[in-house]
Amino acid sequence: MKILVTEGQYFKLLLEQQIDIEFPEDIEVRYTNFNPDTKNQRTFVYINGVNQDDVNKLKELKDTNVTIKVKLINVLTNETFEFPLELVKITKSGNVPYITIDEYDKIKGELETHEIKLDENFLKKKISGFPKFITNTLLNLYPNNLGKNSFVNSEGICNSEVGLINIEGTNVPNQTWSILNYFDTNPMVIKKLIEWYMHGVFDNSHIPDEVTISKFEEWITTNGSRLFKDGDRLKELVALNIKSYTSGTKTENLTIQRLITSPFNIDSSNIKQFCSGSNQDRYDGKDIEITTPNGVKYAQIKPLIWSKVNEETNEYIVNSYQMKNYKSKPLDYIIFTNTKDMLIFNNKNYKVEDNHFAIFKDPPLTNID
Image 1 (cartoon, helix red, strand yellow):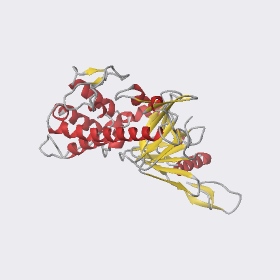
Image 2 (cartoon, one colour):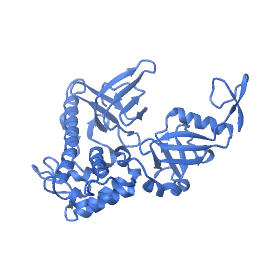
Image 3 (cartoon, helix red, strand yellow):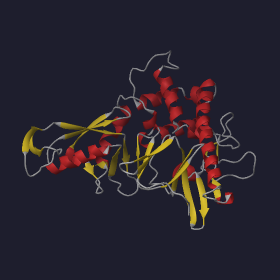
Image 4 (cartoon, one colour):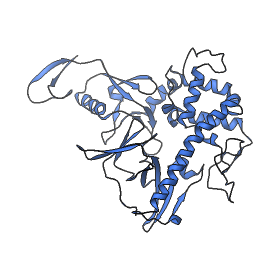
C-alpha cells in the first residue's frame, strides 16, 4: 500500500514536496500493562506505559485512515498482541491509548498462559492477577491467623484491614501485623520466588519446560508450605521484606523530623503515622496525615536517590525507588527524603517513567498549608 506523506513529518500531509513511500503492514508499540477502568469509563481498558512518541504516531496514523495492525509488545513480559488500528483508540485528552473491555476479554486468558519472561515489576501489579493469588495462597495456609493489627508495646487496635497476624518470626517490629501481608506486591520477594522457580527448586534443579504465570502459580501452590510455612525459605523471604519495610519506616521518621523543624515548623502533634495494614496506607497511599490551619493533608513518602532540573524544560526530575503515579489517590503531597535533603511536591502535574523517575512540571514546595 502507498500513501502520500511529506518530508519532515511522520505520516502527515503538508502542502508541498509530497513523496510516495511504502507503508508498513504493522506498527510496533511498546507498553507495560493493560489497566481496566473500574470507576469512570468501565468499557475502557487503558494501555499503560506507551511513550508519547508512539502515542503521537498512533494519532497520526488514525488521521490517515489507513488499514494497519498495531503490534503491542509488553516490555516487562515480552508478550505480544495484535489489534487492527481502528480497535486501538485514544482518550479525548489525546494521551492514553485504550481498547474496549470486550476486546480485552478476548485476550485476558492468554495473559496467564502465554509463555513469558516472569518479571517482578509486572507481577506486583494488580492487573497481573498475581497479588490476589499470593494473598489467597497465604490466607489458605494460615486460616487461624486472621485479625486486625495491634501494638505490642501499647494498647489499642489500629485502623487496619483484616490480615495475617501473630505468625512467629514474621511480625513487623512492635506490632502483631505479619510481614507476609506484603508478599503480594513486594518486588524483592517476588523476584526471589521467580529465581527459585527458574532454578528448579523442589524439582531436582529441573528448569521449567514452559514458563507462564499459571505454571508459576501452580508451582507455588504445590510448594506453598515449604515456601511460606517454615524453614530457611520463609526466613529468607521475611528478611527481604523486613529490609524494605525498615527502610521505609526510617524514611518516614526522617521526614517527620524534617517537617517539625524550619522552614516547615509543624507541631509534632499535628503529624500522624498510620500503622501497618491500615486502610489509608494499603489502598490510599497515605503514609502520614498532617493537620494544617487549612485542614487535613495527606502525603506519600518516597526515598530520594537524586534530583535535578532539566534546564531546557524547567522540569524537576526525581529518582526514587519503585515510584508510581499517585494522582488517582487521595493525596495532597509526595515527599522525597534522604539523609541530606527533602523535596515536597503537589500530587499533580507530573509523570512517571521506568518505575523510578518522577518528572514534575512544578517546583518543590517551601511550605505546607
